[in-house]
Amino acid sequence: MIRWVLVVALAGWGCTPESNGGGDDPEPDMGASVDGGGGEGEGEGEGEGEGEGEGEGEGEGEGEGEVGNPTPIEERCPDAQTGTFLLVVYPDRVDAYRQRGFGATYFCQFLELKEHGITAAAGLVRGADDNFYVIQTKGDNGEIHRFDSNGEYLERTEQNVNLAGAGGIWNTFGDGFVAWSAANQNFYSISEEGKFRGTWTPPQWQGSRVEGVTDVSFLEREAVLMTFNNRPPKLFKFPDAPDFDAEDIGPGNAVIGVQTDNGQKALVTGQIGGGDGGFGVALFKPPQMAMNFSGRNDFPPELEVVLVSPQSGEILDGISLLLLSSGFIVLDSAIGGAPRMTAFNAEGMLQEQVIIQHPGNPIRFFKTQIFPDF
Image (tube, rainbow, N blue to C red; front, side):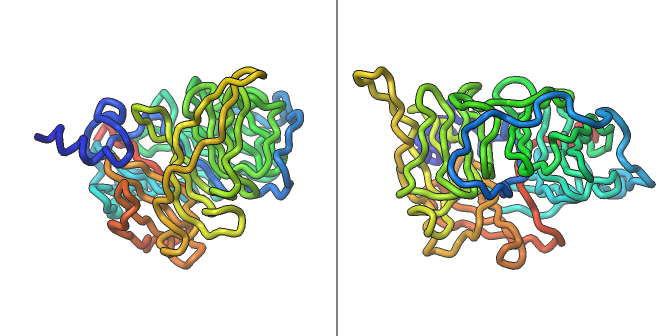
């Protein structure tokens, strides 16, 4: 009986329990990512070209953050216990929320960033080692810092001039991470230990320079979705790396893959109907292939349905998405006043809205297990 109910709940996504992992609210892979979003590049067009700043750059790499008398986790989170939490990332901290059904309630402060000299975090990822890696810009360099899954600071793993103007960091489908600099508009490869490895080139692209990136989602090693602040999303995949249709969606802030039996769909927040439209949420079908005289070609992902229309006013800028088995949650920044989390079912019907009362402007959120030793 429980299995039958789950099939009905997932039917809105076109998933089966096997394809989506089962459970009421499937936990993302431990490599789930949160990125800084809101790429600050102002260049127009797609900006193909060779990457800049390849090499080791300047800086020290490993080292200690600026630690005075950090507040221990027992004080920040006296009721800490092993479990799955929704992490809301700010430039100077990471808060943990209890997320059940379509709602979320504040639990405690999971990561204290400011006490370790981190006041401009642009992204957070979780590695295969179960540690968390935070990227920020400080002075003329970008930095990467490591925290454990109990919320304790470990070390600074990287300091590199190429990472200055950090705009985000994301998990890949393989090993390590990719980071993007809003200052030079280039992607860089980061090792699983949080070390700079050089430039990274998206699939079916020339060079590491990609302008105006706001979000990145790896569907597989050689298939990457991106949203931009100046044009429609793009699927970087062999052979054609198609752009989304500009009449369907324009600039966007967040994208996430939705695994179904028919392939990977894409859930996107962006300007519905093109660059002049308001923000909404759209679901796109898996990309289709066709053969012609020149070989195989990929069509742009076709719009399946607009789940949240701009006219509803239910979301403002949609800077991050969380996928549930029976719907999704959208995080809005403080652009309209207080930040908020708004939950919808799989048909796009509003379920619940949580106004975030704590100070600051969040940059992303995601759900994962923490406090393994509590």
